[in-house]
Image (cartoon, rainbow, N blue to C red):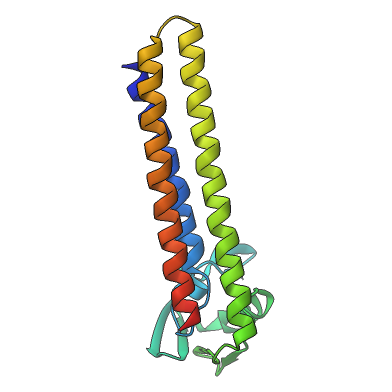
Length: 185
């Protein structure tokens, strides 16, 4: 049963790595406006960095614009400064009640840079998955040394962990490929 526990733990950790990649990719700009672009921006709200999505309703009235309606109109200036300080590269426009972000079309060079960033994030996720595999294999080898697991069980467990690794790496690559295709549209 010990091998199953090690495999289950490795699987959960690998899935977390893929989910982290999915969340990171949501924040990368494509040709269309998406509320996810500004989800992770932190606004200084009465001295506390607060996620923008907790302070405002975020919508996309058309494919080239993000509309941010703060629940408290007094924080419009804070939202504008937080967006300007972020790495989005967008200029917010505010009328005191709402903040508008116009998404300009991306140049080929910008698309290439974003595609490279996606590839790097994907590779980081794959490295995390491989590190989890290495840790699980070490734990299995330790159990064999401690005589709590047979060598046959060790082989079966390592094979399962390798299959799991291949599966999760494939998921990460598919996410990255899909995002790159969206960027290049």
